[in-house]
Image 1 (tube, one colour):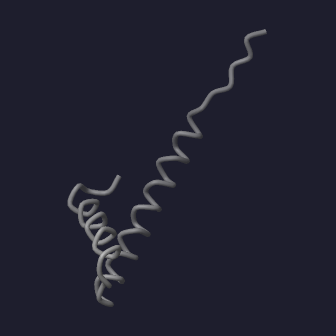
Image 2 (image 1 turned 180 degrees about the horizontal axis):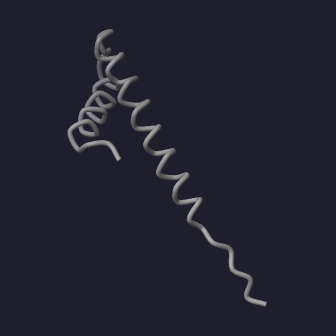
Length: 58
């Protein structure tokens, strides 16, 4: 997953965006962090799905 620092920064920007408007630089940073997070999430999820084995108990 994302490093603890990056995840904390992403959460901070999300909370800040709910109370105030983010600067253009912060919006860009947030978008980059979100994309990185989603890519890693999808990759990990895909690995989990590939490791599923179906067993027929008949």
